[in-house]
Image (cartoon, rainbow, N blue to C red; front, side):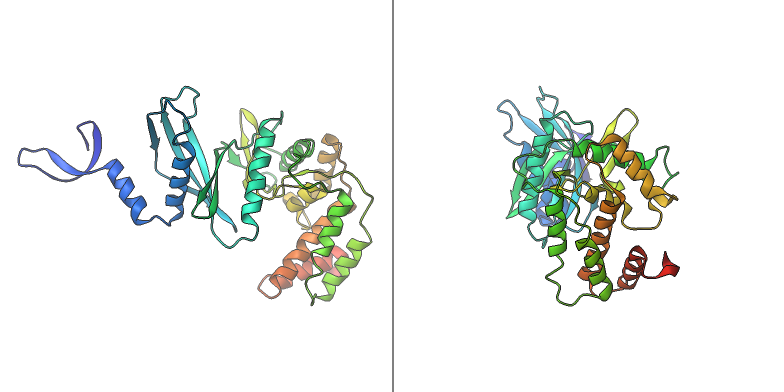
Length: 342
C-alpha cells in the first residue's frame, strides 16, 4: 500500500486506522542482508558500487528488483533496471552484472581482458551492438563486470525457426568482428601459432584414445601457412547473439575473446556435426557467406581443423562419462575411419 509517499508491506493498522509495516526499501535491504552471498545480492552490491558516486550532482540511485538472466560454467548474469536522479546524461536503464560462480581458472585475468576489449570496441565504429562496460567491481576478491544490457532475441541456429538465415547472421557477425584491429592489450598470435598452441594443449594428457592420437596426426599435417591473426569473439553460439528488428545484431559474452585463426570462431558454431543449422550443406553455406563478407578467408580444411580440436577437447577433458562414446563416434566419422558413419 502507498502511504505517506512510500510503498509499505502492511502488517497491521493503528487504532486510528493508519497502516503500519515494512517499507519496500526496508524489505529490499533486509533481504539483501539476510541473503548477502546469493548471486542476486552480489549483483546488486556491484551495481550500487558501479553507480554510486559516479556523478557529483547525483542525489538518488534507485535499483529495482534483480532478475536472473541465465548462467554458464563460469558465471551467472543478473539484470536490473536502474534509475538515476538527476540524470543529465540519460544513463538510467537496464544493466547486467556478471557474477562469477567460483573455481574457474584465470577468471580474473580473462574478465579484465574482456573489460579492455569492450572499451576498445566502444572507441571503434563496429557494425554490431556490444555491451558498454561500466565498471569492474571487486566483491570480496571476486571481480564482477557491470555492463549495459543488449536488447534483442537470442538467435536460434536451427534453420527455419526464425525469419532469418542463421548462417548469414553468424557470417556477418564474425566478419565484422574479425575486421576490427585487435587491441594492443591482447597477445598477438598468427594463425599457425594458434593451431600449434591448440595441438600443444593436448600434450599434457598422457593417456589418449587412439582416435584422439589420429586426430592430432591429421591436425599436425594441416597446420597451414602463417597468416595474420584476427580478433576472435570465442563463443558465437546463438545465446550470445541478439537480433532486433530496428538495430544491428547484438553480441554479448566476450569472456573468451582472443587473437587467432578466424576458423576457430566458425567451428564453435558448426561443431563437427553432419548438418550445421540442421540443414544439408550448412557448413558450406556458412563458409560461402563468411568468405563473401570477410578479407580473412577461411577454408573448409581450416574449419575442419578447429572442429576436430573442439571434439578432441571434449573427449580428453571428459575422459569418462556418458557423452564420451558419442564424441568418439563423431571423431571416427570426421576422420573417415568408419565408412558407415560418414
